Length: 477
Image (cartoon, rainbow, N blue to C red; front, side):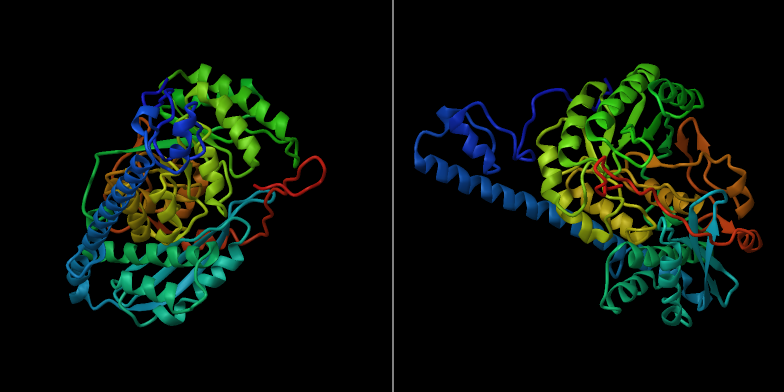
């Protein structure tokens, strides 16, 4: 099994639904207190003393973790923090934003995805590039990005934190994937401008390297266990050390709970046998499973030792995630549909996952993802950013990955060899070597977009899969 996989007994108050065989200890465990032997709690006063002591320890632990996170965040955004220092260095340039343009670019093909980019122009000829792609909502998010033009034009692009706060708080109607993706796109472009103005890659402005290279994982799938095994083995032979797939099957646009889980486990077992014990198997249930399906799948998948199971539950109810947490030993991950630090704080505080997965083009941008990672670091939770987008999103993610101590692994969906992206972008994209990414070495984001090529790939409406249960009821996806 992979070295991180622990097949031992569940322990700790992070799993509140686990029952003890000791009836006298059971009520203590369900209260969120440590599991105890009968001899440890003999009188009611002993219980009250224990509860008071544990409550005090919990409060103290929470305070200490919160204090650590606050101190780390102040180093980023405080008056004497890293962003303030970079902003001061850019002042002599007297940078001003002169224009903002959005670009919706279609991938090409039947019902293909659209990608949304923004360019921000300055009086010194420096141009920043950002991305805010939201699947099937490209036109909507592009309009949301354009809304920021009247605020930004004439302002200093180096005031990144101030602009983020203004775009997030002043409109009053805040939050959600559209508005936060629009802010993310603008924020990434502003960092691109600041890095170019100072002649430094963004990760150097955020504190410098925390590692020499970044662990990556790619995607591979199939329609049968044999296809899964073949495609994953090929990824391994190509030099990658981790890969992700959904495993859960559908029959066209229908998901049949019992069959989908059974076939998903068959696909998973075939992959593990093909790639060996040390290869990182990442599983993305993509919110397709009901709570019962998620529990069934995770319990049956434990013997295969996956690196993590992603989005096994929906984001609206954290207690659904807590329920699953108490019924499986598999490391859990979530976060691609959560936005800003506020969306992650409770998940981290309650230790509901082992990996958080903010998406840099949805969560609020580069600095916001760094803040989210810092909050997670205080609770010893690792960062595994979501990223099924373009090289702009990949590079923005990598700049955070390289300077973040609790980073674990980074997702990509294309492996740097697609001509489509090579034609659209210039200046150099991510560099991969033996399953890892090397540090971006160009100033700013490290990439630019050819506007003439972009104009040849106009927006085309895109509709996501419309998944149903066998009785015709709407299913999640």
